[in-house]
Image (cartoon, rainbow, N blue to C red; front, top):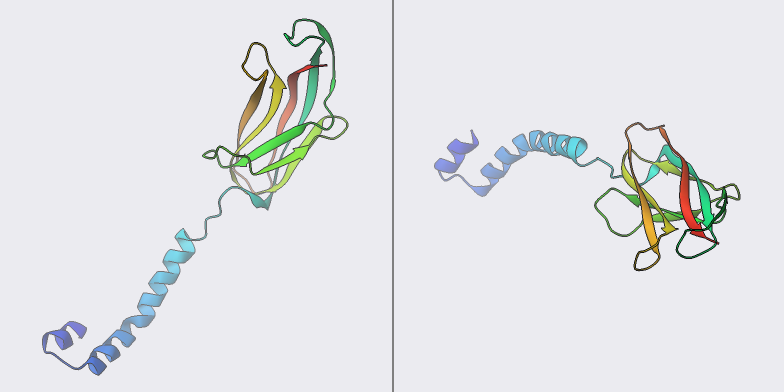
Length: 154
């Protein structure tokens, strides 16, 4: 009907009426597109999943990490998380508890990178990151990284 009106040079009012008749279909189409494609949430805070672990230090008395002195939990150690795996700067950080445990809570499904720093020799800064790539696939999932051993100079 609208094509017929366009071909026969009808007035703008008549063309507007034709459009208004089809407008509800257009709104339904746009609403469906937004609902299915516009509502995906990226990794990050806002969910019910969590990532946890426990840091233990392997201590050395020299900066070359050759004289082992013992092991103990790493309290007050920084642990970092990156939401998604395409970023280079961390999104959040926490400190471990007195027993070395940590937990990132309220995460949505997606990919994450959890990292912390340990001493190393020979490396330029005498520190290197220890990375863990994690994927949360379920809303209430708890990912346990277990015990993570880091080399530390006393």
